[in-house]
Image (cartoon, rainbow, N blue to C red; front, side, top):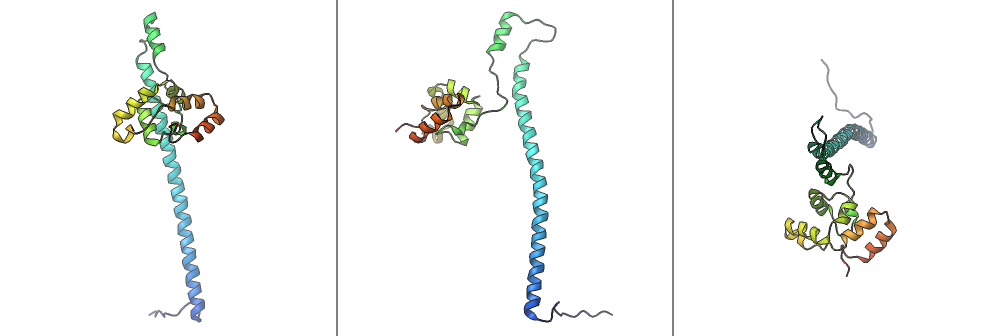
Length: 177
């Protein structure tokens, strides 16, 4: 029969305590390292999934264009070609509209839902139309003043980043004071 004795690894109390702390630290480090590796793999998998979903969403937006094209074998007439040319082209990569002073993530989401995805589209949208979008979204958004947003967007569209930054330094939440 084996009898277990409760003797420390070392006979000195302080050295035994330090050995226990060293083992505990080693176990904590190994646990951290394993968790880090596990979550890194899971994070990479989730990022790949998000990228695939964005691609599917863009493909879905692009498919709107193909639904209105004529059936195969049928030659489109001039009216049909004009209607195809008038359809908006959905960009493959939307611009970061939050660069515009006064636009935050929620307002960018509202604009995207209305089909305003790029600086070019925002630059061509009258401030009154943007204000209507904000008013329709509720009182939380009605306080925003979009009068400078199309002008800021046109500078961003044209790549005039220095001018945009200089102007934004003068603005207060997208408004001229």
